[in-house]
Length: 71
Image (tube, rainbow, N blue to C red):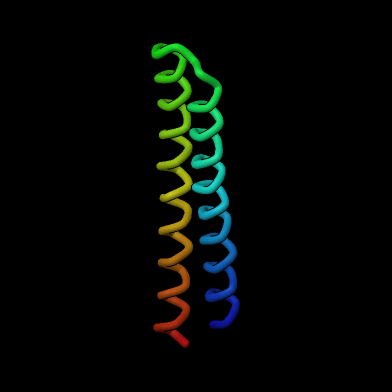
């Protein structure tokens, strides 16, 4: 069951990397001084990616929990 734990950890780290990317993308967009409409469009795109990254991270944590419970 070690393979499940390590696979889940890698998947969780991939989701965490996506969340960090979203934070950096939003910070960059806010520093760019864009007008309200353009900023909202960028934020909507990043929020979609953020939700997907959060989902990937949760799935990875679920895999880890399953691996721990089975092992």
